[in-house]
Image (cartoon, rainbow, N blue to C red; front, top):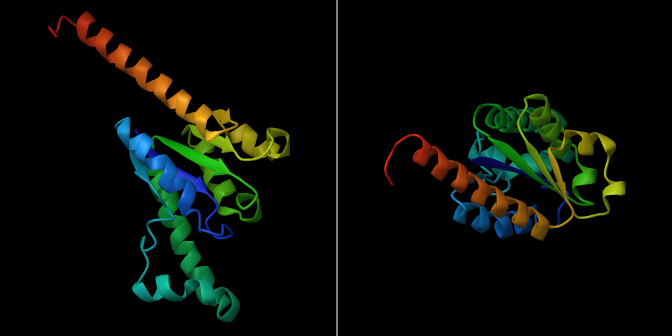
Length: 169
């Protein structure tokens, strides 16, 4: 599967890189591909846009908005055309921004599964986001257990399909 990692970037102290770096090895070990928007700073931007766009929010709002619109188009195109599922880490920083909410709503609308990992009590998470989620997890450990279970189930289904198809193992 190809996963998009959604969650705060703009307001996270580490620009959302910590949790993404921690979750990627486990997903890759299960044979999945991962897109990390916090790691891919270039996207479809020029080097100047990458270097300057955050400052433009205060100094050149028009230019900032044009650059953000390029990022939005890039990320939503990726979700629509390449992603099999979205994994979202929802914490207090994600609640300050809007991109994550937009990505989850878009994925839900497109019928793309959304796996929501909550870093806060579920009752404090927006009902809208909970409605967009295919599965809700209260910890990374719970999510990893789910993914490991899915991997076992998929292996069993694949093996059963091969055996049932008359293909010799």
